[in-house]
Image (cartoon, rainbow, N blue to C red; front, side, top):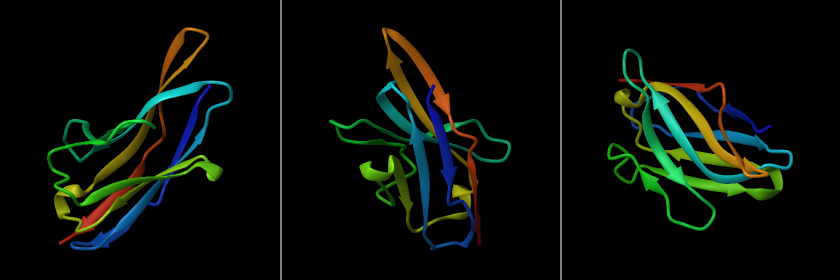
Length: 119
C-alpha cells in the first residue's frame, strides 16, 4: 500500500505564498510518478504538476512559473511551493502517486488539503 498525507493548506491573501507537503509512505511499492491535482469549488479536478525522479516536471497551463516542486528524500516528502497566489487558485490540492509492485499497478490519492486565497 501507498499512503499519501497532504498538509500545509491555509487561508492566504492574493499575492502570498504557501508550501504544501505530501508525506509518502510506500512500503515495498515503487513509485512510477507523482502528481499534484486540485479541485476548486464547482470545478473539475485539474492537473497542477506531473513529475518523476528522472524527468522534468510538467505543469498545468495556469501555473505560469509560479509553483515549484521539491523533495526531501530523508523525510519521504514532496513539496509544492506556490507563489504569487491568486483567488482562482482556491481549491483542495491532492497528492497522487502511481506505484507498482510485483507487476501490479496502483493509483493512490491523499485526502487533500484546502487552499483558500482571498482577494
